[in-house]
Image 1 (cartoon, rainbow, N blue to C red):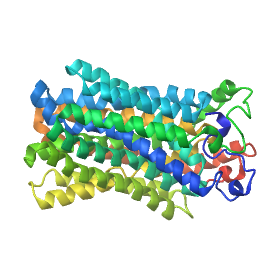
Image 2 (spheres, rainbow, N blue to C red):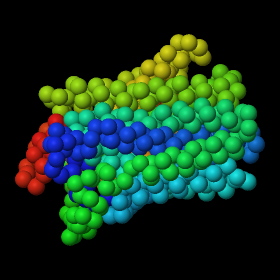
Image 3 (tube, rainbow, N blue to C red):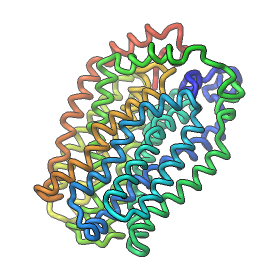
Image 4 (tube, one colour):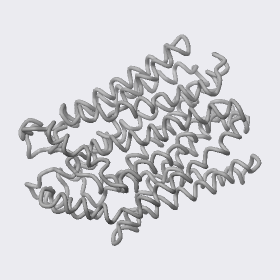
Length: 450
């Protein structure tokens, strides 16, 4: 993806673009649907493992720490590789990068299906993570580049929620397939689905259609992309508030990642449900996490129309709410009351995703939006998605899974502190960014209202 085609920087040369839509509305929603579908495949391949934890634990006699590592290594690879791979996508092209990524994680998932031991499965999971590394940041940049800026938080929350919905499908379908056909077929089904969807995406979505006025990704060559990147990359960390958004988002997702990884095992061990039923039940709660992501973005957009700083209040409320509700849930006895508290806590656990993404978009130059989202993905992975399942598994070996789940929600305290710090500096940092970018940025980008 060339720098001039990143989110929010499409030249407005036709009536569609001048109305806030760089492409036709119909095509924009088709691209969103296909991009959302690939994100579903991404997380289906990632989370199907969690559904077969009980099978792997009994067949290969694995500890919870090893199971958690198999889950966390994918997010770790995403965190380590998302930044360099997103930079490559900025130079090589978005669509080609996304198709390569989808092909790699799908083939690697098929490799997991034929693993003969823990080591081979670990290698397969590692390549799943490498394949998925660029998708989140580049995919969301593609989506935001063809929609009006006023929809940023809503679309960010909805797109990121694809991770939760993909997790639902991964653990639900994976658990059912594993129970009837074996855990290897659970991986196989996910890999085949990803390859088919990637083929459809490549046929429908092209660089030319995404930037119809440019004709091709080479129509407007950038005379010095490396030099421009060297100037703009420091702005990724140029303010206290944007760093706070990165940190707060990552720490809060530590909780959500732990729930998505270990709820199937929680229901298997403490509610004595078989693999398929445990996966389906966990899927309901993971779906609630996804709904919370979307709701957080919608609420953030609505309450911050007049006062953008209110986005931080939404994030803070979600963090504190999830802390109280989840701490309560895992101290209640098994039964309807515990499930109700768990559902309420799950709803808020990742509600910070939409507001955090919008804040990062607002606080970084639009010309490096893909790289900014890659940085957010890096923070989400290294602070939350990678360590969450692994740390929970390590704690579970010492204090039991229930004991570990009682400790994990405390991470929300650190996330809340980060969001409070960001809120304190937000208006100053946003004003400074606006001053620096005028007149270089488009007027609608200089005055951020998302």
